[in-house]
Image 1 (tube, rainbow, N blue to C red):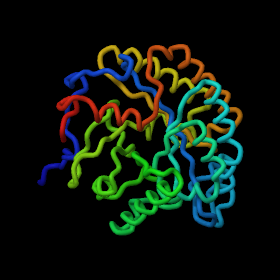
Image 2: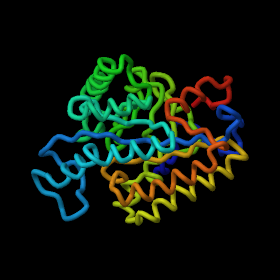
Image 3: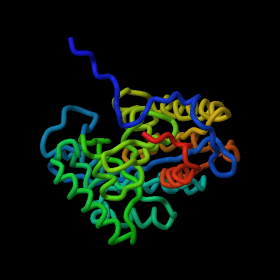
Image 4: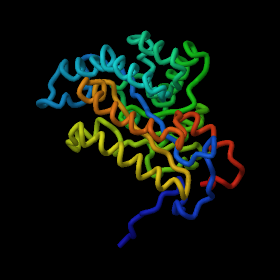
Amino acid sequence: MKPFDTKIDRYPFIPIRDRPVYDWPGGKRLAVYFAMNIEAFEFGRNPGPDFTTMPTAPFHRGYAYRDYGNRVGAWRLIDLFDSFDIPLSVLTNGAVYDVYPQLLEAFRKRGDEFVGHGRTNSERQADMTEDEERNMLADVKRRFVAVEGAAPKGWLGPFISQSARTPELLVEHNFSYMLDWFFDEQPQLFRTDNGPILSVPYPSMELNDLPAIFNRHASDEEFAKMLIDAFDEQLEDAQKYPLVYGVALHTFVMGQPHRARQLRRVLSHIAERREEVWVTTTGAIADHVLQLPPGTLTNP
C-alpha cells in the first residue's frame, strides 16, 4: 500500500522552542494586531450564509446583512478603535474603492494599513485558472496604486481561499507577505517556486468572529472570553519566545451593537497591559521580521 503523504515542502517542521529568540520593537515579546475585513459583494451572487434559513437567489438577506456592516457597523468599530488608539490592518477588496470610498477614506485618515483582499468577496481563488488568478491580482494592485499611490504589501484571499499556485503568483506580483496559512504563532518563511514569501499568522479558524460565532456557535460573551484568554495565555508564553496575537473582525459581525459592547471589554483588557505588548499591524510585523539578522528565520 502506498504510504500516506503527510509532509509539506512549503515550510520545515521546527518546534517553536527550538528556534532563535528575538524581540519585537521596544523589547516586547507579544505583537498584537486587529484585522478588519472590508468587503464588497455582487448582488445576485451568494455572499455566504445569512445565518437564518437556507439562502436562495437573489440572496438579498445575506447581501443586506453585509451591506449593513459597511453602512453602520464599520463606523461603530472605527469609533471604538479610535477610543483606544489602536491601529488596524484593513483587509479590503478592490471593489470597495468603488462602492464604499468614504469608508476607506476614514481608515486612511487613521493611518491604517491596507491589505489586498481580492477584487470582490464574490470570487474565490480556488475557482480560478492560473491566468484568471494572475489577472485578478494585477487588477487589485492597479486599483491600490491608482488610489493609494502604492501596491499593498500583504494579501489575504477572499474566504481565505488559495489555488495550488497562489503563493507563486503572490511572489510574482511582489507581495512580501500573506495571511492565508495559519500554521504557527510566529511569522515563517514559506517556500514558493519563485522564492520565499513571509507567512504572517492570521487567526482564520480561531480568533475570527465569523467562524467562531456562526460556525461554532460561540455566544458573544464566549467569543470575548476567547479573545481575553488567548491574550493572557500568549502574554505568559511570550516570556519564552516572541509571538503574534491576531484577531480577525468583520464589520457586519462585530459591528452589531451588542457585539461591539463585548469587543469594548476585550480592548479595555488589552489596554491595561499595553505597555507590555507591541500593538501594531500585520505589515509592520512583516517588516520587522524580514529585517532580522540572517538565520533568525529558517529558510524553507
